[in-house]
Amino acid sequence: MRILGIETSCDETSVALVEDGKRILGEATYSQIAVHQAFDGVVPEIASRQHLVHILPVLQKVISVEEMTSVDAVAVTQGPGLIGSLLVGLGVAKAISYSFGKPLIPVNHIEAHLYAPHLFADIPFPYIGLVASGGHTLLFLVRGFHNYEVLGSTIDDAVGEAFDKLAKVLGLGYPGGPLIDRLAQEGNPDSFPELGKRLSLLPDTERDRYNFSYSGLKTAFTYRVQHLQDKETKLPHICAAFQREAIDLLLRKSLNALRDNHLSTFVLSGGVSANSYLRSQVKAWEKEGIQTYMAPLAYCGDNAAMVAGRAYHDALAGKYGDLRTDAYSRLEYVRKGKRSS
Ligand code: KG4
Ligand code: ZN
Image 1 (cartoon, rainbow, N blue to C red):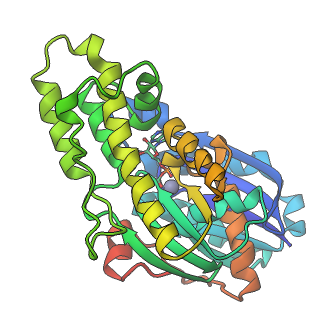
Image 2 (image 1 turned 90 degrees about the vertical axis):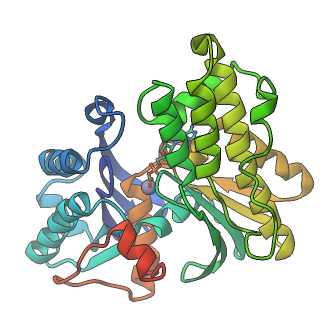
């Protein structure tokens, strides 16, 4: 089954053609990062207009009008995401669905991230899955593509959001994650003992055993940085200290979930799964008998291949949309209790 996937939830305009949830036959992505860098973050209105400008040229790179007959369905990110950006992708997907008579498959963005490692490996269920991105920090117990539960989530900021906000305060630019990751490689995480108080480690109480919190960590580092002399030379150390705090929390809560559920398979995904410290720490779990799966770097962030891949399993389960399908924002997603389709 060939599925054309469209992703426009944030600042990447992406289209991919994927066969049977695995084989990427074609893909193209336009990244808006350079446009948003001037504002140190994504400006929603500019993002949606950029999608409008680039979506059809990106689509053209992947598939011609004539080739559209070979497609079995069109999949599109429905939410959660920036509503104006989602509407552009959804509008194009509906137009393709209507004009070529192809079924429409609306895809949940978080389920798509969780699927990304499945594009490259046959991952056995059940497993513990962590989606760590700019908008979400969620820990799942996954029993099947349509059978999972949310074990925990952030109680305030998402982990990627904390990287981005600290990078802004440090004057590094956007997106903060890769910039902090790079600088941290030259820094010593122990240089700031007063910042190494394990601020981010939510206690493992029953309520918060699988939950995350990042606003306290972000605020502590922000204040410390403001009062720092000779900030420039200390930047790598600040980044290393922050990164270790932020990532160690992800690692610890994920290990709680693995142990409590007697599972030995772990799947890491989302933009933050590109973090080099996180990847190396998770890989090291293999020595302890934990099978770990993560997508190649290019598929950690937003991309349409994961949307088309995930949609294959939604199609097998008969989960289709129609021409009235609406998008949903992050807020609506949280309010409606993390709906799954
Ligand atoms: O999944 P994604 O592309 O978009 C959302 O769905 O949010 O994630 C983007 C997030 C940004 O916050 C970015 O700073 C973060 O992923 N990120 C990283 C790294 N690369 C991207 N965070 C830490 N280390 C990285 N190497
Ligand atoms: Zn994403």
